[in-house]
Length: 262
Length: 305
Image 1 (cartoon, chains in turn red, green):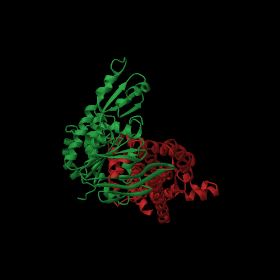
Image 2: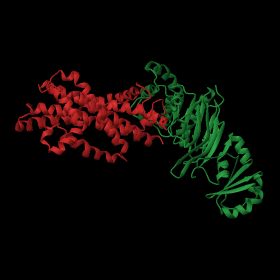
Image 3: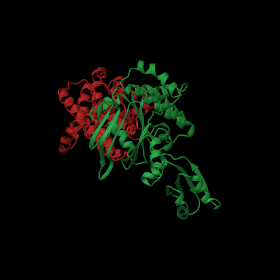
């Protein structure tokens, strides 16, 4: 029986690259439009909320509100871009365009395909998160050095949310259900996880819940780095994010194997 | 090379209560074109997916190119080319890019792919189309590109699921001609089709399927000779029941299918003589074919079965 699950796991450490490169080639043809589309939303949030609300709010956790928000927006945009890439684009390649069916006729396994898709979604998260970080650094709201060592944190966050979204894809009976994942899970996290205001503003019970959510881990990892603070608990957040990346990946592999290969 | 390219023995697969594949066994020799012939729902696509390791049989044994499947299906797939029933080319990519991307799935280097691509495009009669986007190609060209793509890894076995369904006659004949070239080069082909003419033209041997069961197996002309063995007169118009009674003495067998009467007669001229002068009747005399075999074995026509 266990041998049956081999098909759901990556066959080796490099097969996924072929899948990533396929998506990269497709993206390159529409790169400009894709970049504008992906970046307009977080930038609007950053400047709209940052300047508008920032004037009222004043300083938050010892920094200007817009600097506080910029870190939240880096994590949030990594989440939304990885989520959207997975629930709309990757699921389209699975169900509508039959791209995955073609891949499954080659020496790729389902696990190779999944890993390639998640890595690709993480790459798009890096693109979105980095663009905001560059803007923030240019305006003096973030340390330039963040662009160096913050990238792995954004990539890991992207992988986490791609992996979670892949579970949603594997459970949803049809694409009409994706909106529930988006509105009931992804959007609430923006407000629960300290992206736009500190978690300490929440009622105590909600604070405990918020502490478990992946976006909280991502925000708490990225914000100290961006603001140039000491982040004593970075190792803990990285560990938690790794769990959030690996466990949903395994779960979605098992669920999708049942759906695609029986 | 082993004497068997592909073997299924006693394979079973059920979905819920419904048996999709029922104790199916057959073996395909290297270099042979073996047909799986049956109406939609007979289990052809399920068999193709089993051979690729995408469907795990409930019981039975599958060996593909010496590898046990599904246990080592990935290794088998390295030497298989697939022409799927539904087009899954990349519509936004060029012809060349489609080959490049697919070659990478097999772990081929870009240099290797670029080295083999021109020959594949020549073979598929797509020379000069390398930089065209797939969405600009005709249906026949897309199918030929799918065929070229299936050959990128220089496979020993080709698995084809309805390769010419939906094509116009010209495009279809071109595909058949290309497949014969591949057979001449020693490739083994498993051809799933519900298209009798295709099976008759291409297959060295075939098995006829109904509801996941094998109901006949053999060389097409031998099957036809064994099951039918005489000319067929198709009779249109008139009351089939009445005509049936009239011609039965001159026929080996009579089948009614829809509004057509199929009369299997060793001496067709006797049948036409008997019906001569009856108004509104149209008679067509022809040699027997696989469609007749299927009708004989199942009592149903293939297309609307």
